[in-house]
Image 1 (cartoon, rainbow, N blue to C red):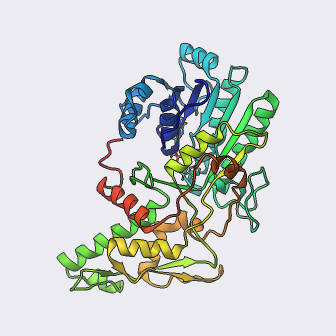
Image 2 (cartoon, rainbow, N blue to C red; image 1 turned 90 degrees about the vertical axis):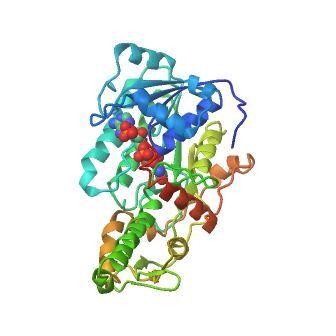
Image 3 (cartoon, rainbow, N blue to C red; image 1 turned 60 degrees about the horizontal axis):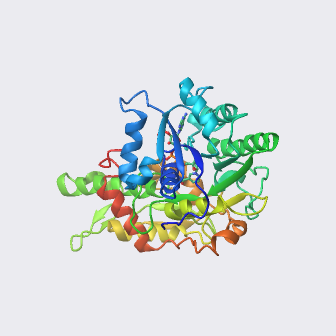
Length: 399
Ligand SMILES: NC(=O)c1ccc[n+]([C@@H]2O[C@H](COP(=O)([O-])OP(=O)(O)OC[C@H]3O[C@@H](n4cnc5c(N)ncnc54)[C@H](OP(=O)(O)O)[C@@H]3O)[C@@H](O)[C@H]2O)c1
């Protein structure tokens, strides 16, 4: 949605602009007429500069020349106490930043990456806040997550709450980040806005994305297994496939691949498209009121059974089922199930998710503005996965 700016131009500093959500926010803010500074690191493994990294993303976003002209890239790294900025850049940013949009984070769920996750999400955030201490910034917009409250039975509300058993170090770190932000902002008189998206996928109208985690990961894993076993059946003896109970229907080339997904009663995956996430955050940035925690979630989670059936239909695979189990049972029985579970491990809790999100505060601003989250249909799924496969899961995007 192209928004018409009703507020005077502001000067933003955006972190995480090479990431999925940060890039869309930076692009949308500059299209709205704001001046946008980006903090982008130069990766040690790549020779590309921070400017080059952003320019590729700006091309991919198809930003207008006017919007591009309003953006300035600063080479910097949250890991360093002074953000690794040159003295001139530091002075400029401290004097010219009115509002910060903090979208940089480590988004890994892995226990093995706990140190790295906390380094970016807590120490990196602390570095940013110390850097901005005493500067001109009056508002911080922080991208948190709907899963920040852990795994409660009651609906998750748009409030600060103690976590009820975080599922991984990512959720833990995001919860601690909210505490850090809240303490800093109340001490310094800075207005804090917290946005909590659930699982963000590509554009629901075009399928465009450049992140292929979360929703994409299981589909990609299944497509990989399909290709592997198709090759075995068509080009080799087919013994590996047969051992796994996999066969090919000779008439319509449907692959029978019996995979059992664990599913608990009432579970679903809460999915929001990137344009809803971006439009919502931009609208909520000016929401009235003093309570400023907003859920960017879908009122209707997508049942796992739908996602399994969408995947089977798209990839021409039969035999995949989502089976209801109690939490104690372990239904994975076949070798194929075990193989698939290995791919799925980090995402399993989100597939079996029973969390429900109350977004009534966000809705008070979004519904009158005509911003609605679309239901997740087969046509959206097909659009997104077709884009993913055409771009070879991002490999051909050159980002
Ligand atoms: N995507 C979702 O479904 C989702 C859902 C809920 C909440 N969120 C939250 O939304 C925010 C953005 O997520 P995303 O999906 O856009 O993540 P992403 O695509 O993985 O991007 C992460 C961004 O953080 C930057 N970053 C990481 N460490 C940094 C450092 N030390 N210094 C400077 N920049 C650093 C990355 O820069 P490099 O490119 O240099 O690595 C990248 O730009 C995060 O806070 C995340 O927790 C995301």
